[in-house]
Structure formats: C-alpha cells, structure tokens
Length: 230
Image (tube, rainbow, N blue to C red):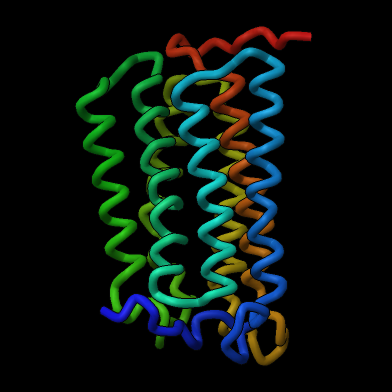
C-alpha cells in the first residue's frame, strides 16, 4: 500500500487536492479537541483524575488531531491517523465500562478481550480497500461495531439500573444522529455541496463530551457518583 496515495471521492466537500480542500470538515475536527481540554480542566478542578479518564481524554485529543490530518492531507497515512484513535477510544471506553460494572460480570480478562476485539474489528473495517468507494452510506458501515458496543453497553446499564444510564443513552442517541449525518454525506452531495460530514463531527463531539462526563461523574465500580466538589 502506498501510504502517500491521495484519498479521493470519500467526502462530498473535497473537490480538489490540497490542505484547504475540506475547510468545514477540517475546522469541525477541532471541536473534539476543545471538548477534551474542557474535560481536562473539569477533572483537575474536581480532583477526579483516574487512569480511565486520562486515557480517554488523551484518545479524544488524538481523534481531533487525526481527523484534522485526514481532512487536510487526505492520504492513506492520514486515514490511519484518523481511525486508530477512534477505535482506541471505543475499545478503551467499552473495556473500562465493563470492568467498572457494579456486578463485575466479566472482570479484567473479558474487558481486555472485548476491547481488543472491538479495536481490531473496527480497524479492519476502516482500512479495507473498498470502504470509501461505491458505499451507499458514505463508508459508515465501518462504525457498526461501535453502534453494537453502544447498544450492548446500554442494555447492561439498564439491567443494572446504573446511574450513568441517562448520560450513556444521550450519547448513544447522539451517535445514531451523527451516524446518519455521516451516511448521508455522499447521497445528498448534489443537494448540499458542502456535504453533511461536518455535522458528523459536531454531533460526535457532543457524544464524546457526554461520554467523558459519564466517566468523570461515575468512576467508582460500585455505581455511585462522586460528590461534586465546589
């Protein structure tokens, strides 16, 4: 594979090569960075630093940087920089959520297996050679494992009556909405020349923010919330 090969036809907004070929997609990529920095300030203020929260914030920042690289350089190596942190975030969040379950249904071994499996599945789907061309949903099928993780995680939290259920449900709803925006980017390109991919970034950014809020507010394995510090 030629890692410097240009990616063409992947996004409605890009009509020509060059760093400024996708201005809306590139600028909206920076929103996740802003959310991550706000979450970091909130964590430091509450003295709620945990390995899980720090790992997720680091991955969220990497997602923003990777997305910016993809929508400016638009090459295969930039695509890899984009998808690696995304699936890292999904895998780590799923693993920590399972590990921190009040019932500890699986513990560390299954949490690790889940995280690794989701990461590999997502990466394979993201980088397969045909996912950008001839896909009627703008390549969004690569994110089906993330959707399955959201559904499975929501079901587990519902069964346990976990206090973070409402936040996770909001994040899942935002992800479904963002999935729709991503899927409609190419099909609606004739009607909306700028495409809808930047709306995927915006709604995904909100979903990341809600997920980080849930992890910060409910870090304890007993399912109870930390008292907010004034």
